[in-house]
Image (cartoon, rainbow, N blue to C red; front, side, top):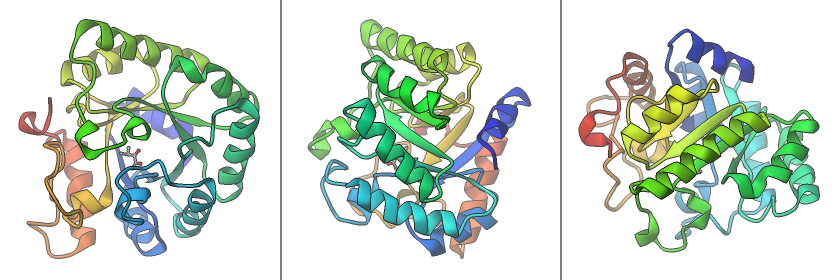
Length: 260
Ligand code: KIV
């Protein structure tokens, strides 16, 4: 899938589905179950490597997993996370983003807003498609207690809104919104032409993303309220993924109780 097709989905009022994959087997299942976009998330630092946060993931880790996942995906748009500290300067960002594109990604994801304007301009002028990521930025989280809803007060909500408009004006193609109130995500989605993909951001985003290990119940410990176990009423992983796709497309996931 081309990145421009995600914008067509928004124009046509069709919801976008996205799940994470880190390996060939999961990539094939997602790709064949109708998932629109596969994210090689740096959540792999936690669910694959067992770390407390995503900050220890290296660009070489991301290249390795991106190459495996993209070799096993023929339908879905493959998006790779730029890991922590891999886009501190425009030169580093360009070199690292190119290596992810060479490994098979069609788009790279960067967390944050105006502080990365120069990096974003550099990547876009080099024809690299970008997915933004606002709200809760996992790369700023050190301890699990720091995973908190963002944009609850007026000034932080305004900052997220302003950054969303800025990212669109810089040429970002898609925007992940993580852990923000549904009303804020709705306002942002209505004010942008590019699609928003929510995780803990309510049903009014243009699409939804989850960490595959969370929605299959593999992740242990207390889960945030936006995680639904799609495997619990299904027999196979493919069925669970198809159920996620159907519920997102129908607008029945996330429910109000799975939102903020
Ligand atoms: O790393 C990841 O899996 C992500 C999702 C939570 C959106 O960034």
